[in-house]
Amino acid sequence: MALGPVFFGAEPNEIDEGPQRGLRAFDRRVDLATELMAALPPGQRKEATLYQQMVDPAMPEGRVHPGDERHLAGAFQDNRVIPFEGLKVASMEADAQELVFEILGEFIAPLPSGPRAARLRELREHLQETWFCWIGGNEPGDVFYYRIQSPAIIVELDHHCGVFLDYSTPQRFHVHTVMRTPHGNDYGRAWVRQWQQANQQPAAQDLSSATYPGAEAGL
Image (cartoon, rainbow, N blue to C red):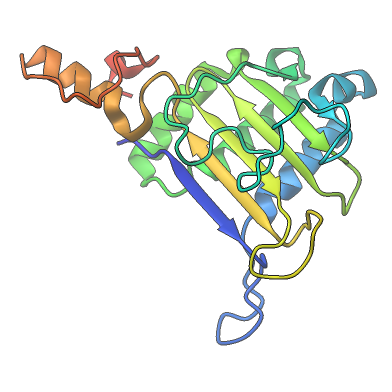
């Protein structure tokens, strides 16, 4: 079962009236990331941080998109090649690596239990090939962006400016998240192509020819 691409977002990140008043989303993904940055020694924290500010003078032109802001894997970016950036998870201490794994677990939580367990095994197998990068502050209350990326998954979280509400700087109560499956397996396309080849079926024109790590194992 493939889960991706997925976009979840909220503005504001809390139901403010009605029977579900007070219900919040994304807090765990935000808090775990803040905890991860705090767990890194200063040198690794610096290595993971691409830019100190959400809109940084050091950014190249176009790095902040008018709609996606800092996201690189948003809409219309199927199978985009995104270079690894920041800090390699393999260089982190074990407790920090587990925080990375917990964050990934939050992103795949919508999967049913069986496919979720299989996906977790796959993500752990690629943990040593996983990278973590950060933009913004890392103190309590700061706004930020982060990306965790491996040959098997890309996840992003970004605090955004106002869309429905009137404010022009990123706020913690406005959260956008994106998840992609790289190497051609968004929408499960690599798996479909494998089945077509194995069963001598004609391939649909829009299916990627890229190879997806782990697909042959049926993960």
